[in-house]
Image (cartoon, rainbow, N blue to C red):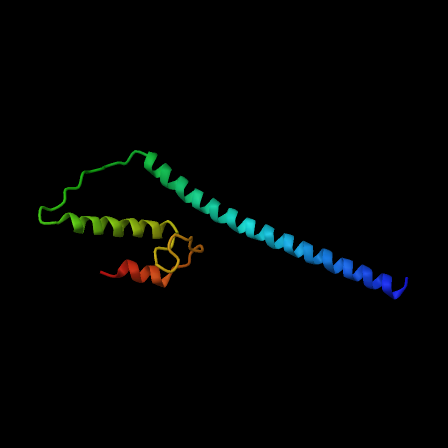
Length: 116
């Protein structure tokens, strides 16, 4: 083999490696998307199962007469955000709605939850 043929083979191999690298990057992005979607669907499925189960000891809560409807709405909103955070989603303005990594707490979300 002459030097030109070896150089051509090395160049060809380098191009194929680059193509494989690009293909691998695309597959990795698809996998990350599918994992995130799977987690979201799993959480949604769990919530739907909880809704279908009969709730034992359900009582109607009556709001005190002095509580305004605005305070009730703020309380409900805060409870909904706390529920979303417990389900594994960000509630902070930085990453709102994105899924938190397993077991990782977000300081922004926690500070938002604990403010009065």
